[in-house]
Length: 366
Image 1 (cartoon, rainbow, N blue to C red):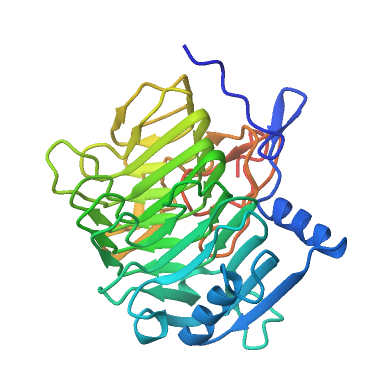
Image 2 (image 1 turned 120 degrees about the vertical axis):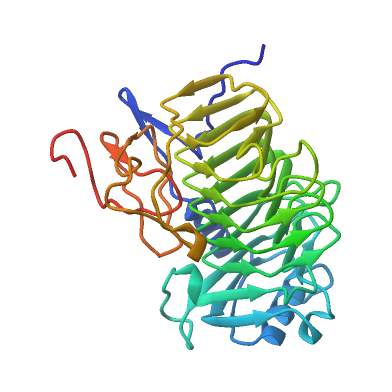
């Protein structure tokens, strides 16, 4: 029997009988502080597909800024793979073991103001390639506030593929994105994110309309310590008999799956590849794989999406998931609309990717 999962200090700090989590940018901010102590930092502002790929290349092995604290600010707009990417995905690879990487959508033309709304910055595979392929062996890699769509491949991770090579063990943070309508003839249609020795944190993402012929239509998250929280995973599919259209999650040490909606996927919405997982306060249509080590507050109810068929996965005013989940150390992050969730030691939160309720607790009733 695995030991009881304990979150790292990076994910959770106990306060009395309740807990709160640090925000996703904290580790990257630490990297920026390190830069001031001798590690170089470089910030890119890009507004075309060619500029984006050039910034990724310059940050990669062989590039002039490899091994630095690299932050790419992507101006609002649509960026398609094709000639700019060598007819492959947008790609980055840092196998040197040094450097931090942060890819951010939502910036204005001068990259001095950011609107963290995923719909404003679109990375598009044009139904011809994977969309975004990132590799890093150490330190941290962050992706936030993009729509990642229309990937098509025979490889894993048609939409977003992070650390799919041996030894790719950086920390990974994926937050506030829409990952939709990607397809692979392999497995992991929407997202593949992995780290055998570190953290993989997937927060406040909408993952929908993805498909994988070999299973795991929504994607796969494989981690030493993994956390999947406040995501909406819906309408993902596979044609493989007995396989999962939803999300495959496995943690070799400690895993946390909290405040998510897994609804209307082929077979299981969440499939656990290991039992060292806490499965708390989720809405789950069907669960597959291993039994979690612990589970608390999970439900199986129609979420009450505004218009799932039309792509609107916000919750209606009478949804049973509004303010319904007890807060147990929420990880503060920004949803696909740019709204921050409440970080409260007491109170309740919404399930799913979107922060519909500004604040709700047992006293004010929302």
